[in-house]
Image (cartoon, rainbow, N blue to C red):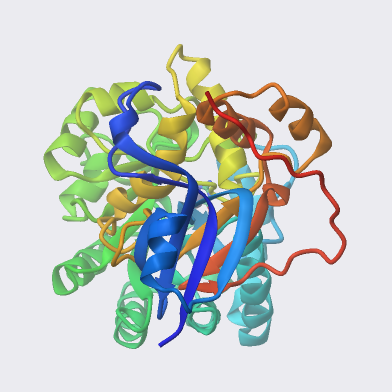
Length: 445
Ligand code: GUN
Ligand code: ZN
């Protein structure tokens, strides 16, 4: 048995905050601690109580920093680590010019393995401990993704994109090989360690109706797998989809008519929705995923968070790297705040931090395992420093509440604000050797 006590200021959510005054939605403990035993959280509470429970356990003192559940990114693309920040076009041009050519490189197992290492280095550096990833069409990319995740004991979800048209030859499967390869990868990886396979028809434009039928068969045969795709990101994409699927009532109907919608379905973007599509989201329990940095970068549009939530729909939030411009869920919350501001919608920092942790865990149906510091859950934990840059420290000198601190992290934080990351109980972010910063214990009113 291995035990460790992490000491620091502790914040964990029990429910989604209704507003900035909803103190019942979370616990905040000024001199708090988390006891980790064999990769699981054994107890979260005051340092006194936790230390009394394990008097012999080593204590890692993270004061004055903030301990929270690791961030969860519900939509990003593993083979796009070298596509991020590619200039100048909207979705379909961007895919054809940069993204598809880049993804052909992942046919090569060695390239995939090198990129998997870099990819998970970035996720951990930015405090993300669980992600839902699109791999490339090639089995090699999925194997590299899960092998590296398993080596690092990360809880990861991902799948091979199924795509059999409208892309370069090196990126195409067929309805049959797409099915067979997905099936083989599910058998190898789904439920292995902390890995989960996600059935991944890339989007309607790159799949024939025959491939959609095969995706439907996979979903029926593996109802415990999540499903991910893209929906209504861009107006040209929607028009082209409706040309390719003339029988469909609307874009979402393509996926709905092949039985791909349910509470385990994640629909990246979901920006330009018809009212029937919103009704169908309500009926099926599928989850839109808001990707603010990507939506701004590609000029895709403004996600209607309040409108969807008003219908009882639960939305995820995600980076969508490489159309997304940062691996940081803090930066994602920053841009998300601004996208919602443009629509006179609000996002309080308490709601934002809930969203990136427990909220996204709920979207995945995994809140019993990740997203909080509750006893019995897996010890994926970030240590946050709201004074990680001089500009942040200056602002923090005038902060007097937890919400203000969280908002500084949300608007100004990035990987420098992530002091440490625990993955399944193990410290996994190698701190830069020389970092002398002034640390001050906040005194909240
Ligand atoms: N739609 C289909 N594929 C992609 C992709 O790789 N990125 C984004 N942003 N949208 C997509
Ligand atoms: Zn995407």
